[in-house]
Image 1 (cartoon, rainbow, N blue to C red):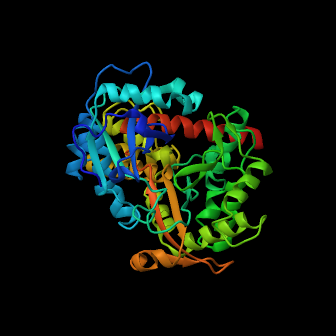
Image 2 (tube, rainbow, N blue to C red):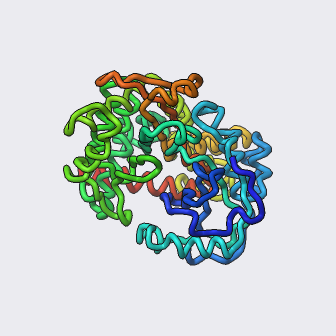
Image 3 (cartoon, one colour):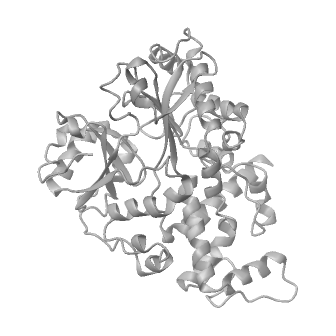
Length: 451
């Protein structure tokens, strides 16, 4: 990657808005420095009401204690360093070195002026609801420069064939079976979290229609299940699927964040036409071919299995973890009337009360490790998976010996590909009460409107 100098980040106009999530805005490079091509910047955001208010400690004392098994995480001095070492030391060993390139990133110093200039430069491209909630964090002293996974750095100059990237937010791939789940919330054990949340989002007006996508299909371990999941995502992508061609976004389901904008045959027809130089199929069949190709790649790799295993580190469910949280932070537990010393129970209390009492009386180090597992699993439940592929031709065969190559099961055409995990940021300890409230709201609403 580029050797960053003092003047590397002066021209805000060289960077183009690529997308954003809850915490970061992502920009890709469009300037004239060939060494920066294939680079994206991740710039931290701040709620508008807080912007310019100065920097809080990157981790609280409680969080430093929580993550002490990973010293580089616990001692991080800024948000960019925290993100880098968390991905490198925590997530990469779990998800696989081949799929997490945390080492290919650079922490780059920036000026407030650069951030303000970028904010002005990208304002028209940001979804309105995102812009109303947060702007770039002008107090940031650094940004993170990473590889652009929508491209194959180095291959662009070797071949004229297009590069296609499919970014998927898989979401929860299993049904929790924890004994901590209450009888009234039993539906969590039989209906996917994604399906339940869809109903609430629909009533709230956040989506135009409920998606038929089911993460359980994607994580089923079968080609047919993966194809079914992909087909549902392409029909109703919402914010769970995006497609890029040569680094440019060509298909997505979220415009201004509030509605599903590509839930129409017209949008899929446009995508079909965009695939004309990517597959050997006739119009009307290209998307079907692409779905089967992506399914073959995912089925033949271990990415989904590793992601599911990481999600399942949450064995207690939020209904159990909430009790560990209040004990760990030393606060009264509003869910069972306990202080940090444990639940007050009678001899005739039900099994769950006894279970929660054991959570509160659990040794502090065991509480800490279980909280870490929950937060790591939360990262895995909210991350993205990107498949990037390029038709194989004579000009890149020689350089692709060490790359992954696959033949399309429909057309027989060969492609070079890579799989990358994205959005692997650390989830914060103080978000656990929010996760609990959201969980209860989703489940309660679903139960009330489906019975």
